[in-house]
Length: 354
Image 1 (tube, one colour):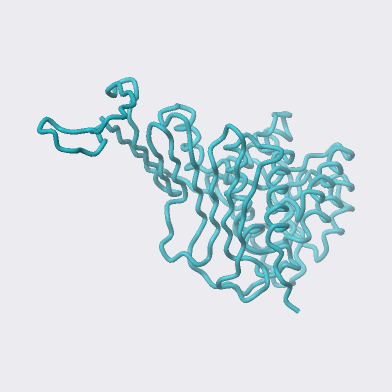
Image 2 (image 1 turned 90 degrees about the vertical axis):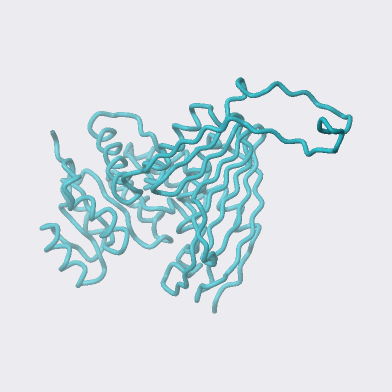
């Protein structure tokens, strides 16, 4: 089996603790980190020791190399698109951290650069491959919930934040930082609509910067269930990640457990509308209700978006680069997410910190 040589740009929480952690783990049998780029000298020294690789202070120093099969772009969010475009123009395949780009227009330019260069580009949307989400998709495909009415997704908790992820200048904030995970799943569940109707509300609750840390997003597409996405840093009672309501029952899920409660409409009593008052045998008024034969199932989920999903993601990338296998996650799909993010920010202009 061929080993692919990898360069990682950035050794922050994502570059080192997600991508790097996978490449250093026993799960990785297909990739070798041969170069790391970071502006901080202590991070370069640590990377040289941890990976046994070459290290550089500037990503342009990679341009002279011809032995790199894949570059992982884990830079600051506002640098994702321009650095990815530069890498593509110099003949590198690129995995870009989320957000794939700051805007829809930037995302289109990234994809155009990939097509012009003939190289692969992909957005690191590994949450779509997370075990809990795959289980949700499996249950929905079974049809046991019937026609879906609403999908509620919550990536929320309570936190105060003051790092670069609170700065609009860095293309940060909850919608662009956390949002690509639930929004990518939402777009997938809606079959990647081109022009969804979006209502949103952004706020700043516990941030010490000028970017958002609260978002409520409603997405409507004709013929599809309403999707309600919440990304909040002011929710002390973190709810289920997913609650899906259908005509025949409901699903609720966290990252570690998925549960369903549903009934079989074919086995339920046949009903027809009655417009006369309902009453019991004694002629007293009664409420319109019945006892359905509910079925309940639950699944404990092993693996999460930061281990099993990362492995599945890089299996996809490896198969594409070595065998030409089509990718389950494509940059064109991510464009629909960027269009929604553009709408959210257009609907909620936030003041900028001086």
